[in-house]
Length: 320
Length: 320
Image 1 (cartoon, each protein chain N blue to C red):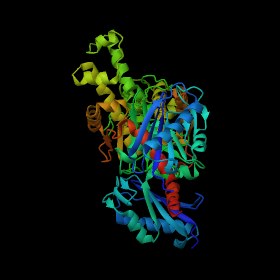
Image 2 (tube, rainbow over the protein chains, first blue to last red; image 1 turned 30 degrees about the vertical axis):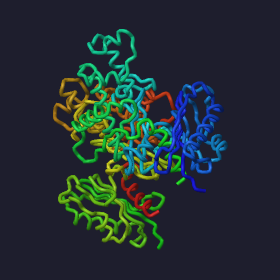
Image 3 (tube, rainbow over the protein chains, first blue to last red; image 1 turned 90 degrees about the horizontal axis):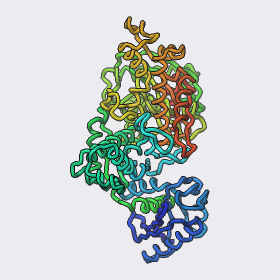
Image 4 (cartoon, each protein chain N blue to C red; image 1 turned 180 degrees about the vertical axis):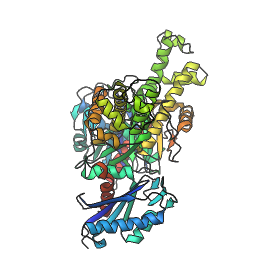
């Protein structure tokens, strides 16, 4: 059988995204639609339909299929192929998606965390192409992490390795919804940046965003970046502080994993050099003098496709 | 050939330690002597003599030798088998110890960082026996780290993985000799604990150690532990603070590597439960509520032999 395509799927809280990906990581077809409110049976039937459509769009059929990779926030077990819970999707409790989807499609399925899938995508054909290892931070509402070492995703004993958003960068610092204090994601996520600006304005600090906040308009990290770029002192200060904490995170990744590169992805990465240059600058101001072993700190190259490409890559790799 | 012994060597700044170790990790013979002030040729000749003596003590000879593992602080390259520099030993600049010792003994040599060797020892036949992974912190003058994942030491792209003493736990915190600020070892090493107590006393805080400090007597972490156990408020506070920072380090290890266990070794571990119970207590007070994936936090089981046993274990494993 001459398989020539793997399908990568990203199952989020509201959307199902899929892509048909060849063995070089090129997208042959992609598609997305809402699955808000659907239970596991409907979503899995939906996935099968999506996969068949993607194959047809690429002028292929199931006989060409190498496998399917599914990335989703979880919690899940990569080892047993089960989704333990799915936030925002009803009835998703301990669903053996690997086995059930595998039976429906008669093809190997691999299941992983969405941040791991995105990291694997960037490792495979994005910012880490040609390297042996890569660590990716996904800077969105929270901070996700994925660690690829020697070409394999690090899962750890309890399958929660790479949860770098909950590493502590400030002992006794800001409380986090996870139950800890001082987590990275309380300082350096898109969510935290917006939250901190709003709360400073509410405490009376002047800012170009004061009017919007006063009117109760929603503020996100993109607004903060725009105002910071325009010179707003408050936005600049909070953004720079986030970059300082991200620099500490990069240094910690350097000392823990010593990888070839660290990719700063997710919503915050849309700020581009305004993010990476500042983080790199903070790193170089204090990085350790003993060794020349700093990973390259870079932007992602696959944008929002990293997750589906990476999920497909996991299916290809499982086959190899 | 029926090989039955590997030699583990720990080359420190002043002492050369060696042990003959069987394939189950049992020490058959051990020995140590000073090599202070000696250059590489003398030390390597010394090593050969030490190895022959250890074999003879175990009623064996070179025909039984499976290999030799050498642990040393470095910096060094595991990959090329070269010691780049050796602190306190003159003339040790870029010494290809693996090849030279290998030629002298006609046996395979493996070189690694001493903290890695100790971690591997605990993983192999100590606190991590039977597990797939382990992270060890060596709490001495500074804080060393070793990471064993799936039975292998993590080296990373630049061979400096596991330098956990220089992960940042306090952004913009205390300056470290490494050039960074807020490194773990500035808060949670035996050296830092002693230093912080002395400096608090010099700033006028009362303590049972005030007299000794006033007389210029050297204070170490052991004194601090004794006084803390006896209820001295200052020593208790600084010790507890070190344990709080170690708790953050354990949580960060949990989220980064998600290993089965974290071993707290080195000088500070002589405090026993007074260390581990307090660290565990701080962890459980703030650990994250989302998952039940906390590694076991334990004391080492091999004491000061972890390094030589681990180095021998690396030689055994390289052979396998």
